[in-house]
Length: 278
Ligand SMILES: [Zn+2]
Image (tube, rainbow, N blue to C red; front, side):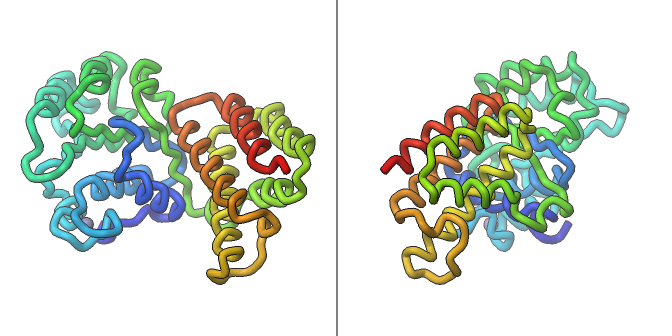
């Protein structure tokens, strides 16, 4: 890897850039079909970067992270065993309490949670819960279910999408924006009830919320005379667009905290209803 990017998921890059300064937790799970290791490295660099748009990819810390030689970014491996051994995990736990060498954070990156047996995961519970504020844990997992529920509940989950998913915005996002323009509360409720009863998957709902936020932001730029063309949502007032984008952003954050998708649907529907009420 010679460039800081998350191949196939520019949306997640944008989210991490936006949130790296006010990180929503200390432990993160990168799951989903995309390049999870690249996503974890992207966040690790964002935490160490001293540039403007973090991660800049050009400053000293960014280059060290990319080269795999940053002293405060540890990729946790165990070359002597098939799975990660208790000893390696105990070392991580101990090391996490030592101040960073030169960075702002101390990052531990687990490239494959398939190598973390339940009993070894237990070694980390305490440090995940009450470790020092500078210690950050990044777990790459094919499925978050590879981690114990007790570990998962201490983590914020980010879905990494693959290249096949990013070509088009989710059509339901555009539908939602058009529906907000009509101002119809029953239609809005029906939209979210439909997602709930269709048992919308976490990743799908995340895509709807994030794509919706992007559409509303684009419409806000258009309404403010900053270019673009009239897309879905352009009929809303600037205040509604800005508030609506915030609501969708906040809901996407809640999803990452493992809140149930149905619960998030209910909350976001109520908040949007208040926002478009005449
Ligand atoms: Zn940088």
